[in-house]
Length: 373
Image 1: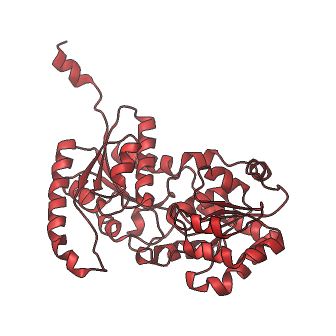
Image 2 (image 1 turned 45 degrees about the vertical axis):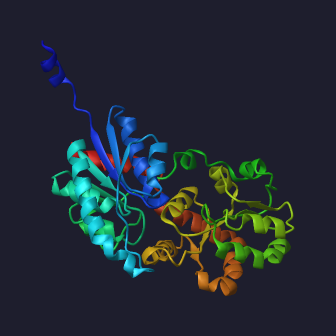
Image 3 (image 1 turned 135 degrees about the horizontal axis):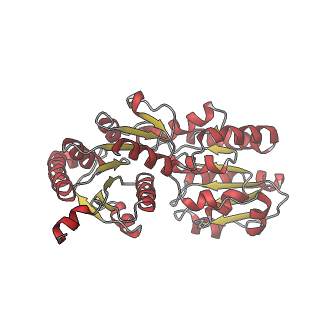
């Protein structure tokens, strides 16, 4: 057999195009899907398309994948004059996406939202490549809403997401970090690991890597209430407020102030109650931990999607919610209702199971390969 015919007998390597970015909530699900495919097909080839200057251009190579950048941005509502060049950017990004895709020749494409996924998935669909959408939030993003019309399937973290064709929706959850799934520990053991009293009710407060000034101010206003009740607090402040809070406040050992928490699986495990913003990936992690949660949605998220995420959980009695504007009046009372009632906490934990999708990445990849087999 000559070398040419021998080469023709080799199985064709799977080629996968992925696009999503702007925020970690778009990037990390795409990476998790790629990781799951790579587990099954070690010889698969991957290419990401991202937006130049956005965090995916750093995070994707760190995860071990190639990425090509396109010049695309969203509408700047704060400075309308800066949008004059947007049509040119869109045309340029469409042209470059088409060139990249034709050269790479993927078997299918997965989009997880963000500026770059619009041109990338649109051009892929025009070239006859099967496309799949993964939407993290309860409210469909504009890009994903448009792309869903051409998509083979739309993978969601909520059973109903307005703006998508109902017949295409597959409620499979958001892919989350493997260490969160595998690292959940027994509560008292985790408390001891963090230097906390295993017999005292413990609250974990998380506001994202930058932190939440709303949550930080909420805790500052209620430190005396916290001490009086004897509750323990793991307080992740984020980097914006950490130095001021750590120098201004005299805190007892029962209140642990942390700029950032690397070992989130232990912090989740140590908590009896969690206070959090309502970002999509945060909620998916909280659902897997199945700890009762008070959500304080970030009110300036695009199309107020954090509030819509939170409402989905509240309607299932899987969480309580306090709006930013209600913190002074309702934060401590609502938190107390959860902390002081074990029956309420058990009900919320049980109801969170509905949203817990620890195998999301695996099930999403299963569905993709059912379509393209």
